[in-house]
Image (cartoon, rainbow, N blue to C red; front, side):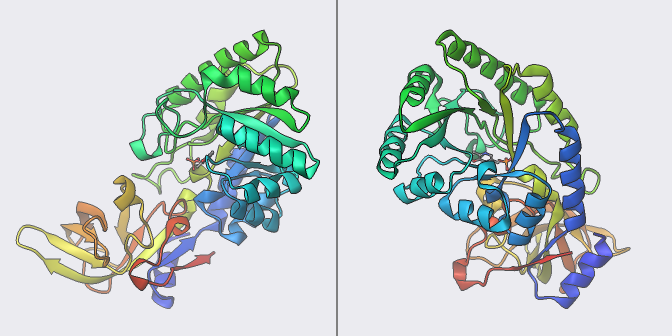
Length: 382
Ligand SMILES: *Cc1c(COP(=O)(O)O)cnc(C)c1O
């Protein structure tokens, strides 16, 4: 989608609003299909990144499965046309109702995050007279070099079971009449750009597979989670994530056993670059030491900068030919963290200008809130 189109959308709709480029999403899905074209490889889309129903339908049509973290997401996935068998469900705090739903709908597998949860799933499956399909989410204690809030695979995280308990819990699962042991699950973090982190995960999985085999156990599925990052600095130069390097890292470093299936759960890398948050400049305020571009979008529409200190590229779509200035780009919300960028270089910016906040397709609208009694923004697909 061109900047002229984005500008037109902003001019003809209420801002702030999201614009989603479905052609770019299609290109991204085709790149995934091309790079992950192995027998027994399965890519699941992590719905939490962006659950827009039309986006879900497009992704389901492309043949991906769904990765869910709540019963609401399982329902959204089924509604959008994902096959039940292609759905996986993770989450440290699954409710009884969510477990019943997963067993009842016969989804592909549940990723179990604690011994306590495993016992509850067994009881619920017994009561329902069904067998629950469960994988163990193992905490591999691998450091993903990313923001502390989105690293999930260290020993001190709340996620997954200790690798030391893997064999005991896998055996308990395999021997239970109410459970089917479907394999191992991992997820080490998000916005990872160093393939060495994924390589470290592969090597750790190879070790753990050795421990399972020594105990006479077999994991039919290995799920390596998601986390592939995108280029927030140069989104227009790199609109599609480096799927080639990502998938090659697993092909080259992970040793699969005969008959084993490999699963991926990508969220951000599928949808981030197709989304733009369009916002209008309300005021340019001259402070004593800096100037503020106060815009009509805030942390209510896009919370990543406030939550993680994330920086999204911002372009002024209205300022052709004007000389550069430096701005703090801030929202209208009553919180100092409601800041998109500090000392950010933009062409001279004026009231009424349209700014494009790039790479906002993932964890943007999905995390939007009505704080300050603001309406949720509209999202338009093109
Ligand atoms: C969030 C999440 C993902 C997707 O993460 P991305 O960084 O968006 O790829 C995958 N698996 C699990 C279990 C998750 O919680």
